[in-house]
Length: 461
Image (tube, rainbow, N blue to C red; front, side, top):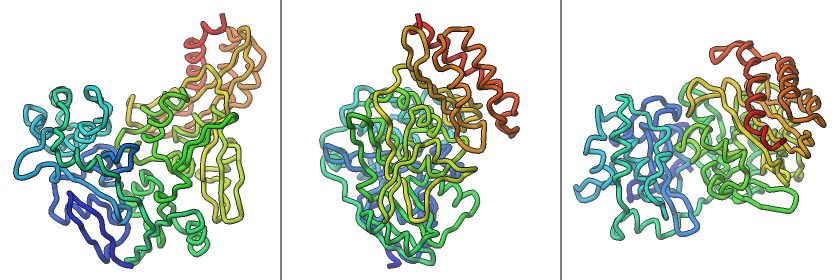
């Protein structure tokens, strides 16, 4: 079909004969809803933020996401609100009113802040205001303090608030979609449907959260004959704890995963706030982060240190691949034609000492120059188990096998770690690029290992 429908600001909308590479932001502005702004077209600034209704254990919830990274067909059957839809009957929304008390300056970024603030305003069970909800929203006037003050001054929604009432009801389930307007956009609702689509369209581009793919669409004008959306597959939306491992569905968003895990995997808990922003984490997935096979992605080093495995599935069945064998070359993986990542398995029990370090030009919302994850188990001050996952130092995410072997069975003391730092500095041959020189990256490897020792030295005593 060449038509799709969704709810926008509480009203049904039908769209037809529009290229499926069209983003929600682009369509909104063409439709005259210009509150959403384009500042970067890659999910960096938040000026385009919109509210997306998502399922929740107690009805539904609102999540702020980047409109510039939402392909319009992905919204079929969903409910979306823009900044224009927050006010009703000519009255300003409480969040909008709060921003008027000094939080709005030039106004360009204000709609995005209002939308992100509204998502936190409606979060069920909140105590106070979590300022992390505003991460990913940039103020070009550098006036963050009045915006923070506006957020902290917010009370709770009235029981009569229309959006609060909407959240007491479930979000509509996602169904299958076949939308064709030039290129084709498919959204299968089961694995058998997915395998049929992959057989018919082996060159289809997979869409999980879209936080990487749609940047290519916007910035490089990347186009595909067939886009294959994985968001309606229940088999990818799971979290299962077993005696030997925890299995995480490849399609679970990172924000959802953070809520579900609730700190039970500390290394992931360290990683979550350093991965992009809340706006991005509301859409990004573990499967997408692995599938892009970026050598500077932050997820793979963490999962390598956790000795994770990728669960791959196709029409022929399922197989499990250790993550260190999953990356086969620059932007290449062990996935066979017709195969997708169904889940990630993390073995249990977890190493008791673990850290994640990210070296980048900005502390938050930036791409790594070097990323390093460490997982350590000691016995009487001696290294019984250590795993080191690294990003930014090779053509793929890597394990530091030589350094791990050097440390195995040795005392976890300053002398040993100093020698190990020299080993890890010589283990890789990173490249020079605009984020950092090879010499800088090499130096960081040894420094991060020594930092890990400094933070865990007391457990060896």
